[in-house]
Length: 479
Image 1 (cartoon, rainbow, N blue to C red):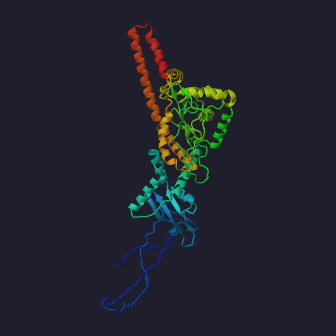
Image 2 (image 1 turned 60 degrees about the vertical axis):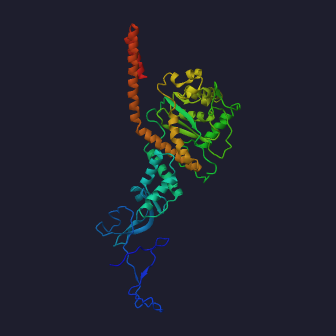
Image 3 (image 1 turned 180 degrees about the horizontal axis):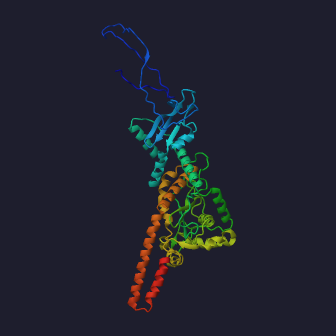
């Protein structure tokens, strides 16, 4: 049995010619004469074919010769297939009819039908869908995960099985964004709205707004000027926000410094601010959520946390939702400013119909008088609304800021939008469990309060106490 060795290929993937000399005899090494070759027959070394084909089933018929013809499947165009186990060097299958010489090779539509995503029109690199879905789930579980770390993991899985190959980071990032955008367009055609809460739209009880200064981005990460694929979907367009801020600034008297509430001074409480001199472009992110933790909209900070930013979000959300309460950490200082601006700009007058609401935990940092007047526990009809739901979302998005600050402007906006959609998708999937638990807890708490009130009425021997408690219990349960 003859020895078998691997064939070498050039840079284009073509097999290099290799020959084997047969019946070669050599004189002993003690002789000074050169070795003499008696018979030399150059024949190609026979190596078994190890070409891998992309696993796509061929069609049952490619021509009009009939399905009974014996089609021949041969290797076609060479490509690189990237799966969760790393890159593979494969060939696209090519089906040939021996009668009419008609050839068939999979098109882009065929590749997408079998969950293969071509990176280019020429199909030089193909990604399997599970690579992108795995990366999405890993980013959702650990938002600080770097894309380079994920690619290194794929390359290591390939190397550990005896294969070699590199994955271009820029290509993966571009293709992943395209994949996420196409998934959004597919859901949009199915009338799925990713930034609306199905439990409280359009009559929302409360909207909570807060800023996140950790989502800054360095100026050196300029990159190209390509637009964002999700432009204006979650993060509002910068030109629209800038025009609104300039309109507000034209109607106000310049006042520097921070507002105070008693002895407390808040950094997120000012009417105007200059752009930071640090080496950053976007200085942060302002987001709005509903009381169920569903992200609604956001915008970029360029001048710190000024009042015009939450006012823009309040104005945009008031057009699509009928909210009762507007929750902020500094609502006691923001609301007089809003009323002053609404007196000068009539289009802001509907915003004053909402009720101000200081989030429950932040109200502890205000004065006692302010907490009683503006605090969430003192607002009639607020129920168990805390107003701190935005902090839960910030704890998730802040971890993604570790990698987003090095991205380009469009890449940062797309990645934040993708993470926001994944967050909302997970929230909506578990919404029925969350609402059921809240209902059971509220019912048990209401029954406990009814029992306590009845026991106190009996202890004080109040006349008609049982009937009054029953009415109060019903009111508490409905509330």
